Amino acid sequence: MGESMENDLKRGAGILCHISSLPGKYGIGTLGKEAYKFADYLVKCHVKYWQILPLVQTGFGDSPYQSVCCNSGNPYFIDLEALRDEGLIDDEELSSCVAPEGDIDYGNLYKKRYEILRLAYARFNIGDPDFVAFIDSGEFEDYALFMSLKSRYGGSFDTFPDAYKYKEHLAMYEFRNSVYKSEYCFWLFLQYIFKKQWKKLKEYVNSLGIKIIGDIPLYVAYDSSDVWGRPELFKLDEELRPTKVAGVPPDYFSRTGQLWGNPLYNWEALAAENYEWWINRVRKAQELYDVVRIDHFRGLDRYYAIPAGARTAETGEWLEGPQTKLFDAIKERIGDVPVIAEDLGIMDSGVIKLRARTGFPGMKILQFAFDGKLSNSYLPKNMEENSVAYTGTHDNSTTLGFLEKMSENQFRLFKRRLREALDGENASFPFVTRKQTALALSVCALASPARLAIIPVQDLMLLGDESRMNVPSVAEGNWKFRLKTMPTRYSAAVMRKINEQYSR
Image 1 (cartoon, rainbow, N blue to C red):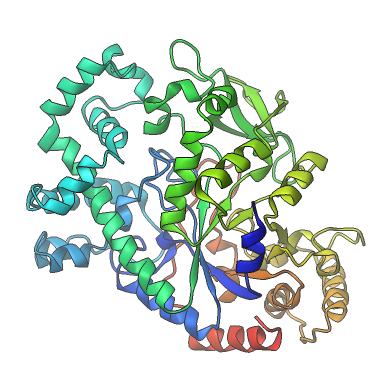
Image 2 (cartoon, one colour):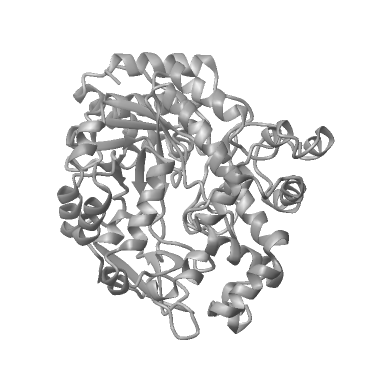
């Protein structure tokens, strides 16, 4: 399935910066003018890719990996100035959304943003032919019903009245009619506007010669329209509660493993419908992105199943996933899809074979490379060309933060090993301080044999751990990082020079 991916991916570089992290006046990054400015900035860096995290509407905990609908767009990302220009809100209403720069205050956003979006909806013509066609497509039917029920009843869907919890046909028909204008069309309006704004931004980014790498989380949230709408596709009991949940066993990130709590797929039921649900999900991701990164790819070979109610991830068991059957079905229905496999964590021969069979490039994280083992697969000399090199990901410390945690002895040893790696790639870059060393790690990624090298925007700007995006297995305080200003012209010039030097 991955042949076209290898041919389509030219040697190049990219920057990782989620939409939420863009600067701006309204409390969170949006699809507005700052997104266009950032795309222009990427041109100055001579990069060919912009990587983002899932664009989805976030739920509890504000994580883009826990969404109320896996194909949704985040209403927080809607450009309010565009709504003003369309006459849906006025200048005074727009100015009420101005918020301090810096980290995102999700509590404040939740209270205020939906008020403004409801005002805009109240002035929107729901008889607009394009919008009527959007409703009639049925694409967000379950989402709109689910969000309307949540607006009325709150809580998780398993606490809805039974007729709604179990999605009884007549009850749902009557409910939809009763909230059609007040709620149902409001939630569809949000997705309609998001989709329109995203399409315009993506066309602009692509016109600059830049491709967007987007993200599919492997699992969906329990309290989502995905699980509520198709409960038979997940491992649930008769009360629609999970019997087993997702996570990973103890690893580098956590001594007790990571207990994610997402419901697990019923792969037998998915296979019986020839993976239609997953094919549809990949097709929608293809509409949004040029390249799709599948998060936790290893869970498609074998996945870790933890008994529901367990307090840690230590008691799970490994079960067999769909393996090549899923990708064969995807290829048969929609052809080759450019995919990056997030193959971090516990790798075994099954995952390695699955990735080889699909031809998807895997990920190489340089922060993990310098443990002194010559066989370390993240060392540039051990990287295959068909891979994607990163200094770190959204789940790691920033590179400067990573280096600042080191003792003087650890730092000295790290520098020596990094110099050896750079020498091995015929790359010379002088570095002494921790900031210089952080930049040297980016040089190492860009000089590596990996076909693609991605630098997080925090590493481009040499920011410390106060700018970290996520700490895995820590429930609070994540996903808040936001740039106060655009990166500097100097940073762009440095990136451009390194990219030119190493034929990126």
